[in-house]
Every structure is written in structure tokens, then in C-alpha cells.
Picture 1 (tube, rainbow, N blue to C red):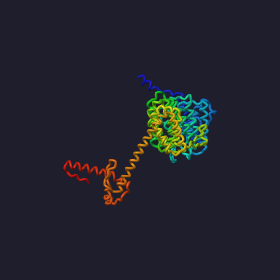
Picture 2: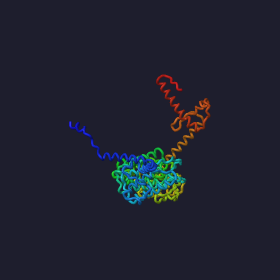
Picture 3: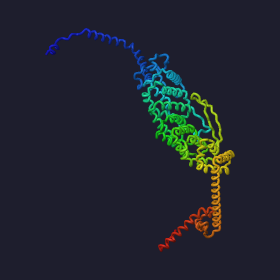
Picture 4: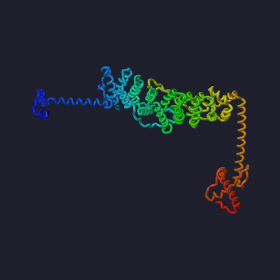
Length: 572
């Protein structure tokens, strides 16, 4: 009721409302009057705002610009305050994400910006917050991760060839600075690993491992250092890195046999194996058997054999019981027709035997010295070229020198006996080993063509005689008995073949020779029916004698069956 009475009363107009409305009317009139004067200024301001917006979208992407103040990336770190240095650092990182293919002024500006970033990080003034870590990883991914062109050069037949030339990336001047910046970022003491592992994730590591196939050795050297730092600092990524490296080696061994970074990957794992805890896990033993040992199979083993040998020896140092497994793997992949690889295998075998304990040696000594005996009798000759590279500050100055070594496989196998440890284990197991070795030495004395090998053979026979003269005499008597038996058997075969040839030539009836039934060449009429020319005597004996004997046996068997059953068997 009270509300209805109050609603009928007249409303009072406030002075403030009147003044506001008057001011708004006057303001509208003023704006309308000055609209033509401000039109040009408005267009200029809008164009500048659009330009600033485009620059900020490049320097500060939408995902990283939250909470970051826009700073001109071309300003030097010396010209800004300490508060703005962090924002300037991020803006410079985002500016360097652009990749330029041609030589231009922007490329030079980018190079100078990268140099400033390296100096800023090395000074310790950088603070790697989450936006800066994300910007750093994005910049490295934009500049480093790329697809290599296809390889048209033929693969080497064994290690490095003499006419092989190194390939250098023309953009290495920029890549080197990016690699240096990434290495300093990973080595930064105040780096928050919990935040960094969110950006250096599995995808980042896979792309980083793909770069090991680069043909530029300087890039592979930088990658080796960076991956080793990542493996040591990010423990959560260690199993994944080992798995990825195993997959790379599997693809190299069993599919492509082409990869440029196997030596660098093995060099990393050489230090990784040193840090394995004892006792070794089953995963690590499987890595030795299924990953490292098959690496002896490719023809290009010479390009990484030194690193491979080091990894294998590290496993044996960790667990001496793996020596027999390693020797068995070497015998499995032993090259028979490639003398250069055979020399590498003998050198590796010497180092493995030097670290082998007696119990493991006795497990494999029989097949091992059968192979060594074959090496002692080898006629292979190999001119091996060793090429070394002088490196300084991750740069190759093109300084190479080559050293030619002329090796015989037999000569290298004789040198095994100069190793004291090998000589000791052989002397303790001489009853088993000497029969294999002595036979090979006698064969060398009678048949080998090289004078150096003959001299080494004589010295080795004297050494074995000093070791155990009675055993050497016994081996010699046994060898003479075997030679006499083989000579008698060869003479018997010669006489038998002479009688067979005489019987075939005379075309006589079947005769008995040394208890065997020999049929006459009754098949000549069949050959004439089919228009086949008569073969020579030896060809006739080898081709027609066996079927004729089989036919005689079949006829005899069928006759016996028919007589027993009272039936006549027709033989086609």
C-alpha cells in the first residue's frame, strides 16, 4: 500500500544527471566535429598496432607469450635492465627459430643473435624457467632436426676405403653454435630437471638419435657429447635411450648395413657399460649377445671395430664368465673370405683371451684352436690402411695421414703366441691344444709360400718342443701314422680306379674288385637308341656305374620275391 502511494509522487531530477547528460551531448558534438581531423591519425595508429601484433606473434608464440612482456629481440643484453633480460632472452630464442636457406642479412642477424645467446648462457645470467626451457627446446628442434638427403655413394666393402671423402655440412657455422648452446643448456647447474624432462622427452631424444646418421663427423662428435650428458643427467630416459640405440643397431645389422654414427654410439656405450652395477642385469647381458656381437657381421665393421672391442672388453671386466659367450660369438661370425676382417678378429681375440679366466677358456678351447689352426695355414695376404684424423675444438682441419701395414693372416696368428697369458693357458692345456697346432705347423712347413711365415713356423715348433718335447714327439708319430694310413688308402683307391678303367675300356663281363660287384657297360646300346654320344671312361664310370649297380640289385630282389610267391614280376 505504501509503495503505491510513493509511486504516485513526482520524481526529482538530480543535478548530476543533468550535468552528465549535458557533458555527453557536448562531447558527442566535439567528437563529431573533430572526426575528420583524427581520421589520418587513427589509420596510422592501427597500422602500427597491426605491425606490433605481427612481430609479437613471431617472437612470442601464443603458447609461450602468456605472462611474457614483449621485448625487441634486436636489443643487446647490455641495453636492458636485469628484470627485462629474461624476456629478452626468450625473445631472442624465438627469433632464432626461423631457418634461412639463402645468404641474406637476416641470416647474419640470426648468427649474431646466437652468439649473444651463447655468451649470455655461459655467463650464468640466464634463468631457465618453464617458458625459457620451452623456447630453448623449440629453437634447437627448429634448427637441428632435419631429414638428410639420400645417400648415393656405394657402401664400403670393409671399413673405410682409401678414396672415401668426408662430407661436411655447409651450414655448420650455425649448427655448431646451436649445438654449443644446447650443450650449455643441458650442463647448466641451476636447471630444473623436473621441468626440463617435460620438453626433452622421448620424441626429442628420438629425433636427436636420428641425427647420428649425419655424414659430417663434426656434428656426430657434438651429438656424442650431448647424448652422453642427457644419459647421465636424465635418469628417467636411460632405458629408453638404450632401447632406441638397440633398434638403430638392429636396423643397421639386419636391414640396411648403412649408418654413419655406429662408432659414436658405441663410444657412448663404452662409458655407459663402465657404470653398470654388479651383478649385471639380464637386460645388459642380452644387450651384449643380441646387439654387440652381431655388429661383427657387417662388412663395414672396420669403421667401428675399435669402439666395439672396447665395449666387449668392458663387459668381460664386469663379468669374466661372459668371456666364453664372447668367444663363441666371434667364432660364429668369423670371416672366412675377408682377410681384412679376419685380421681384426684375431686382434680382438687376443685382447679377449688376455682377459679370460681358465674355466671359461676350457669351455671353448677346442673350437677356438681349430679356427686358429686354420688361420695358421691361411694363404691370405692383406694390405691394411690405417687412417687417423687430427681434431681440435670439434673441427676437422683436413689433416690426415695414412700408414700401410702389410699383414698375412698366418703371420698375425703366429703372433698370438707372443702373449704371455695366452702362452700360459695353452701350456696348461697342451694335451688338447697341441695336436691341432702341431698339425697346422707341419702343413705350413711343407706347403706355405711365404718366407716370413715359414720362419715363424720353425720358431714356434722349437718353442713347443721346449714346452713339452714328449708330447711333440707323440704328435709327430701320430701324424706320421695318419700320413701312412692316408697314403695307403690313396694307393688302394688309385689301384681300384685303374682296374675299373681297364674293365670299362675292355667292355668285359662284370668282375669283382675288392669285394665290390662292377657291371660291364651294357648301357651303350640304350645310349645309341636315344642318340647319346658315348662318354669317356671316367665319365662313364661316374655316370652309369651307380645306376647299373642299382638295376642289378633291383632285378635280384624282384627275382627272389617272384620265386617265393610263385609269380613272375615284370621289371620296366
